[in-house]
Length: 335
Ligand code: SAM
Ligand code: DTB
Ligand code: SF4
Image (cartoon, rainbow, N blue to C red):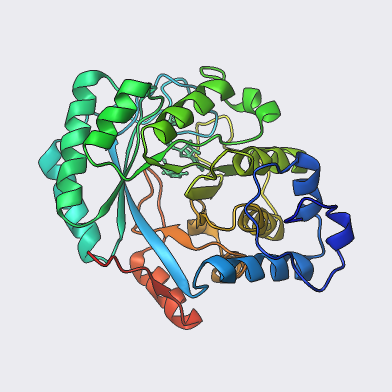
């Protein structure tokens, strides 16, 4: 509960807590939230959502893979790892002009933020300079910028900040305990160190994880507790539903009950009420009704455009139709 008293005391209360930016969430408290009766969970999530945001507004970001495949890391979910059986062809870093042409298309389609992803363990200095030119060019188009380039040291984070970067995406992916089942080539602590470097450089943090990798409910709770216990909550919290890609070790992972997925979104909203919670990967195979439940539970951001990094995403027309049916609208940048 918002003021730190017992959660159980509230679980049947008709009045949700007053406001609340807590940074001391325990796994047990988060697990208790995940298990609330669905109507109570949605009521609490919606009440908090309205305290911080217009519940009819959705932030939209468009993704571009600027360097695809050939990644030395072994993330079990990822089609870009060079360690899996079937791997994507390793490509070179895109040229700045090509990236800016894609950013212009995204702007014309109505995106507010342009997110550039590279399949690197961490960027090399000369690659980082090219990415800085991309950031400067995308900002000049009037778009917000986000990049996800793997691990960063303090100097690299400052270089990106100097180029004008608005957001850095680096996910914790899952709970500290389950993490080792998914990735062996870098540790949870490595992730936290990168996030601290990004935060200290004054860049907004985009950090979330994945549901559907075979984790238990306690791992989902552990992931959210880790995010919600950060000294400052990530400004943006992407909750990805695993996209099962052939050739990856998680290709045959068990399906997630859509209601359980919605529960994770709602609990992210309750524990990080001032953050944008992004209904991230996995929408292509989600019904409109499940997506709607996610919006009703506090998701207020999506990836927009027909591709994520390497896998399909719903067409912009389908998303516009859904938002129209719901009487919802996208965030328009004032620049
Ligand atoms: N290489 C960089 C890194 O790992 O930080 C940046 C790109 S990586 C693709 C960004 C995030 O996308 C991952 O941390 C993971 O959470 C998410 N992701 C990757 N493959 C996914 C999949 N198949 N399904 C759902 N999310 C996925
Ligand atoms: C995030 O949390 N999800 C995005 C973004 N951050 C970089 C990536 C999803 C990737 C899904 C698999 C693919 O398209 O390759
Ligand atoms: Fe590489 Fe990122 Fe994919 Fe992991 S998630 S294999 S680091 S591209």
